[in-house]
Image (tube, rainbow over all chains, first blue to last red; front, side):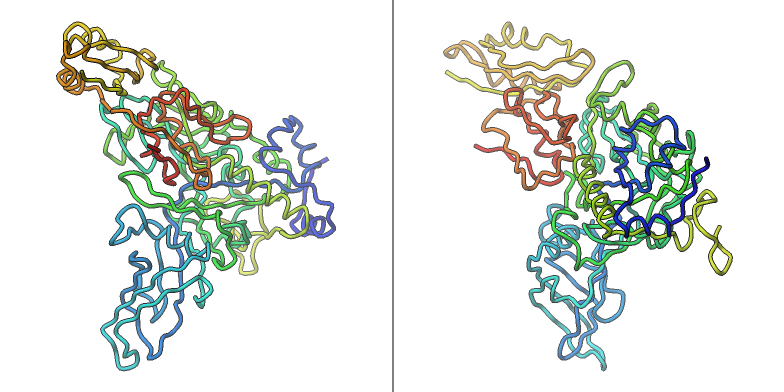
Length: 388
Length: 137
């Protein structure tokens, strides 16, 4: 029997409290060979990731001052925020470094501090205009003082990401962590079989408008992420290197401490660990098959970061099962492999999302428009006929 | 009398060089190897006590020789401390820990620290993006 489910049917089950939801890890562990049976049994599969996502930041509206001010330069705890928008709007980027603390403190820390309810020092400057006469402003703010604060991350949830090693004679400190000389270790950064975009590799269900679990609360897919590249080489439909990405948006005021964590990579700089979860509706057997794919059937390539070029050579293709075993074979030598994204946190987030779905707190949304490069069959064609 | 407890980190190419032999023979040092983590073809680490044997050996010159040979020489003091509140169990410190003191539990994916294996090379301190690893004195 061919299984076909609609979003409405799944949401009805969620509301009725009888939805069958499992995490992607549990879906893999079920080890089902019969995908028609898997699709019959499971309605929703939850996925998650908790890794460093540099392309993150927040739009803040600081509220008007008296007399009013068109803030043309803004600092939050000495971290410059982009003020080239309206009078008291700004964007604080995760990787922006403090002018006084250097790489130890940056935009990501400002975001973490605000969500944790901590005070942040706001400083603003302006040349002054007829309508906005004020030239200087300084005060301490908290998230509650802000009129609006929403996270807008131009590129999150990278579908896949290259692993890294270093063939040179000296240690490299990179955004892929510490890479010891002479290929002595490998680092990688996706949650493999738990990773959202690896479990819906052809974007059948994840699209623009999809509700996601971001920063411990509801968020949405705003657009394809920057550098979205669905054309990437694939194995059984799954990209074997960086491919799809998501631009995510969510209300910072509802986000929870611990779900966005500021980090600083030695001699690289500041970044933000972002907790993101996606619930995949099992529309049919094909969606089930992709969501059940184990680490042993998901691949990436190890690149030599010792070559200072965008076209650095790939050393070899590797499965996530090998990477997650903790040791990888490189030129006949077994070397340690370690992740930068937390599998433990990803598992917890996928579990929380499962719970939210199971208790009727999180319903699923069909994409308003599919991501560029999406396989057909995931969503209905929109009213204006540009479904895909 | 001079004494030093140091961690010697060998790049992969030097693992097969008999450094200890040179320290003993060429510099008259009393060498006590406390811990060694060496795999052929990989970088290796050696935690050693070096003693000049009441002034007979030449400790400073020996350390200079080691550094000159491409070996990283780090004096040992203190111990590694992990702030569990800051740690997110990402694993960024695990791969660079050649002593194998840091690992991820394959069931829970929680960071584990085995202090008996730690050679205090402190690579984990730099490697932790959350700033959760420090050296306590």
